[in-house]
Length: 227
Image (cartoon, rainbow, N blue to C red; front, side, top):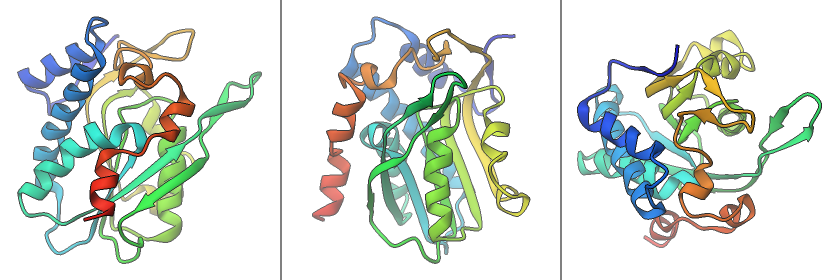
């Protein structure tokens, strides 16, 4: 069936998605493309935010300076108060026979304790196995009871939402909603969604390895930590 685009798409988003999968796109331009996709998401998310609620945007470390900042810049420019959370995950497969990955959190940054949160926005550059999103969302839900959980990614693998929701009770997952631009149904032998976001997001963003990624402190974290 291939790639299916959602109703949220426009010509600019199509162009940005094509730039992600283009192997000639250098890391700096790739990062800027993710930032621009974040801007597009920010505009769409504005209509879903309740003004009097505390809002947390939860990002992985690799997405914080680009996809995450793109969303934050739009929301904050429009006067929304957003609290940032960033997770550093170490993704690995403890048992190669069953091909089930885990992604424990090795470090985290919170602008605010997660009490009295109305909406949690969980972002990821691509959602495939859902293990990273599931881990991070579980951590957030252990510390708060948001009324709304918005899960955001430029690209999702078909079936990822069902895989994610299978780990949560009906009363929790009834608060989930999703915002994405493309759904793919192909996965390569090396585990990457095709066309997805053009391969390994760490490498496309310029990180040599997962270890280097987990040693990185996003600029947005430094700025907001010392603000």
